[in-house]
Image (cartoon, rainbow, N blue to C red):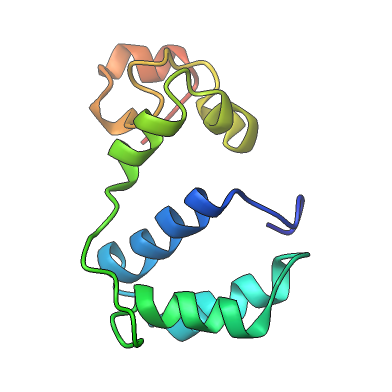
Length: 114
């Protein structure tokens, strides 16, 4: 976000879901970070959405967006990942969203050490 200052709405939801549900980050940290880094930050909407994602808002989300499934659905060729995570750019599209599942020789050949 520091580089671009913006991300698509769906990616914002996936990021919030990942941070809150998978990493167990307090939603207030995500809300503060997004408010500080988004060029289109709106205090009311940002806080409302993060509260919902953090299961403490008035319209709580009743779903969890799996980051790998969401990435494969929205970025099937891996172009978004290649742009924003250039360390993974050499992986084929079959493994770019889950490099930990790629064969060791493939990651080593791409210069990736996990």
